[in-house]
Structure formats: structure tokens, C-alpha cells
Length: 616
Image (cartoon, rainbow, N blue to C red; front, side):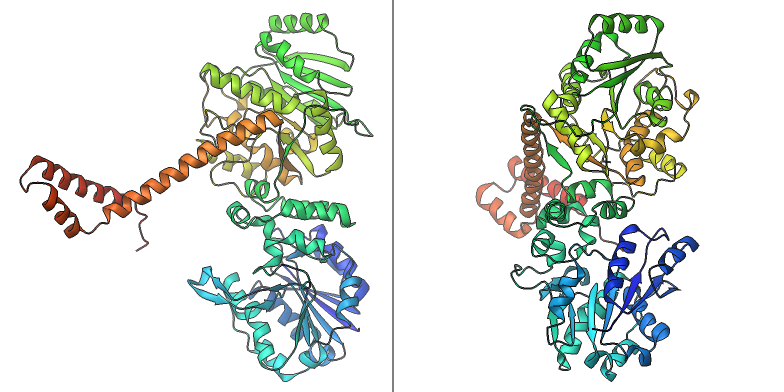
């Protein structure tokens, strides 16, 4: 078919992401002309890049979203007369990755279908529109990839539809006035619709957002971007298998998943992305997995403030199964001598270079690597660094301190086979930048409260570092305890800042809100900004322990919520019924009757205070 493609494009940072260029390059093989319409701003370099892939690039004021861009492309850029010379018009948006599988498969199948318009996927309605307060979303073809043929687009019906399309102010209005309306409007006029990904797909309301893995297993050529950015609650309640979808791509397609990560990482809320893509692995601690084909150059960067903990730390880093260097910082010359003597007495065949530096302890272990060892991070000599420190946590009770330390050491360096599998993660996943234990659960209130008093300082510092990644609301995705594995490039933004000792307060106390705690919470945000994601890892033993703890917390939280609900229901018991109950069982002037009545009114007052207030 003789096709023209009109691609609507909008990107918040005014640059052109790689996945768009890849898509346009593959699309050029199937269209005679390609027009890109950009809503809003576009850098000069971005425009030049797009012009190498498209026949025309137009930038318009941001308005009416993708439908406005498509209308502008058809009417103002191409024109109805020239449009009529084509067999098919493709109206595409930037809301999907692709082609995951060749566009040739898509067009080969749809060319033989006798329809007037078609899409790759469809919404299977009707369903309740929760955003409109109870309206209904009808069945419709998704307009992220919509193909329209001559019989329709040369008609007055089609031109009238676009000329009369009302202005919209929100994405929800745009969906209501165009995407949800287009299919029914033209079907009612007698035009025929088709869908590519239909046969064998379970009948769920919104397949691209609910079962992307199933669509890809049926060789659907597009993957919706939206599930990556959803609130984690959506993934939880709808059981969206994004990680399985990514596995299908890696296993069955030659689509470079780096394009996906480079797009979503700067814009997704880290903990939501972590939830949506299931970025946690449980690694076996036994067995004999093969080493990576090319062993990485590794630096252990350890701050040993407490020399009596050196043996425990060295025991764990001795599990690194390839040659590695050890760079140690400590606070005094005496501690340095003790460390030198102990390491000399316990040589290790895979430990090559050993360096010990005496540094200022202001800023504790955080300043030790960002100031005292900054050159190691920036010199380009290492592929991976393992960040450790002698963690005693004297501000916590003994049992919690011990658990926190073991949680970190074991989940980073449990055994030789465990670390081998960890290194293989980095070898297999080029966009993996940070590997760390998950937030501590036992004995801690971190979950749901991980910012503590650090949010304001983190916001200010992120702005200074040009980190535009959106912050998590309650618990930032972070290496709590500041121990992790990393590619130096993933934490380069923090190292390049050039922090000095004077930036850190003295080490007289443990204070939330100070620079070390702020920096600890910015590690993953800096990695996302640089194009790397973070993954959590656990040993099987720690996974079991943490799962039980999560069950406890969830049971407790839901049980208390249910209890509050029941109390409120009981307190809503009509007063006259309650008084009748009292009349039957309690004397009118008795102390019991008075106390019961007071308790009733007190409970009613508490319930009123607990209820969310309505906006005036």
C-alpha cells in the first residue's frame, strides 16, 4: 500500500529519545512519506535529528494533545487534496515502544483485511470511567497506532470529524472526545473497523496496560509506555507482568531494551518503576555458576572506622570470585596501622592492590567515598565498585544493629556463587547501575517513612545536581545503610559534584537531615538521571525472613484499618436505637448508663475527626 505516516510527538525535556528514532527508522521502510508533528518545544539539535528521519518536521503550540497534532499534520501540513493520493494514513503517537517484532508482519496481515480503519490493539468495553465519576468507556480501537484507508479518509465524514473536534484541556478530555469516540462514531456511519492483536488474546478491558506480556507472546509489535509510569498500586491490583514482558522481548525479539530504559528512567518515579518491573532478584547462595566471560574490574571501597570489624568485612569481600582491588579509608594513623597488619596476616589470592587512606571522618562513610575516594570513582579504572563500611549503628539496640549489619553484608556478599550470580546480572543488563539490599523491615519504620527529615535537603541538592527524576512520596528507593554494588557511571553525578570536607558537619552525632543521609537517598535518583536503574537482591534465607515480616506488617495495617471501619460502623448506629438498647438493659439514672452514653458521644467525636474532610 501507498502509505503516509503522521507521527505525533511530545517529550517533556524537549529532546528526542532514542526509542522514537528507532521507531521512525523502522517505519520509513513501510511509508512513502513521514511527517512528524511535535507538540510544544523542541531543541534545535532535536529538530535536526528528526529531519534526518522524516520528510517534514513541524513544531506547534502544545494544545489538544495527540489529536491536535494529527489534525495539524493532515490539514495544515499535508492537506486533504494531497492526502487523497495515498491508500492509507497512519496516525501514530509516541506512547508506545516498537517495533518489538517487524512491522512487516503487521502490515502483511492487515493489508489483507477488508476494513476502513484498524489499530494494533483495542479497549474491550464497556467499563466504568472512574475519572469521570461513573461514566462509561465504550469498546474502541486504540488510537496510539491507527490506520485509516481511502474510503474513510477521503469522505466528508472524516473531514467533518476533524474539523469539528472540540478543544480539550486535559488528557482525560482528549481521550473522551477522540480515542473513546472515534470507533463508535464511524462504525455508526457504516465504516468497518479491525484489530491486529485480537485472536487468542484474553478478553480483558485494556490489554496493553493489563497483559502486555500476553500481547508480546502473540508477537504484538508494540509495547505501551504507560505501564512503566503507573502508580505501583495499579500494578499490584491488576497483576501487570511488565518484567515478564521484558523477558519476552529479550528472549524472542531483537528490540534493544536499552531504548526502553533510557526513556523511562528520567521520568518514572523510582519506587513505582521498581514495583512495576519487579526489580528484585533472589539469588541462590550455593552451586557453581560460570563466571562472566569477561570478568569485570572491581574495586572494594570500604570505610573502616571500627578496625575491630575488619575481619568480618574481609570475610565477606573475600567471596568476590575474581581479582579485585581493595581501597580502604579510616580515621586515624593508628587504625591504618592495625588494618595494614591484619591484612598482611590474612592474604587472599584474588586480592591484588590494597590501598589505605587516612581521611577526615566528618560525613562518616559517605564523605569517605565521595571526597576521600572520589578519584577512584572517576579515573575509569573499574567497571564495578562494592561500597562497604564498618557498620555498628550504636544508636540502635544491639539486636537491631546486628540484624541491619547482617542484612547488608549477607545480601551483598553472601558467598562465592552468590556474588558470581550478582556479577552476571551486571553482565546481562547493561542499564543496571545499582545492586543493593532492599529497605530493612524488621525492627524498622523505614517503609512508608523513608524520607524522615531528609526530603527538603534532597530536593534542594537534586536541583543543584540537575536531577529531574520525580521523587517518591514516602519511601525513596535507596541503599539504606549506604552499602551497594554500582557501576561508577551510575553514581558519577554525585562524584562529579566535587563535595569537600567542609560540606559535611562534624561527626558528633547521628542526625537525620544532614548531608550524609540526604546523599544516601539520592544515589538511585542520580543513577536514574544517568540512565541506570537499581535492583534489589536477597539471599533465599533473607527473602524468607523479610517475606514473613512483610506479611506481619500488612496484616497489622489491614487489620487496624478494618478495626477502624468496624468502629465507625458501630458509631454510626442510630442514636434512638442505641437509647432503646440502653433502656432495656441499663437503669435510666445508673452510672453505667451515664458512662455508656458518654462513651458513645466520645466515639462519635473521634470518628468525625478521623474522617477525611471534604474540600469546601
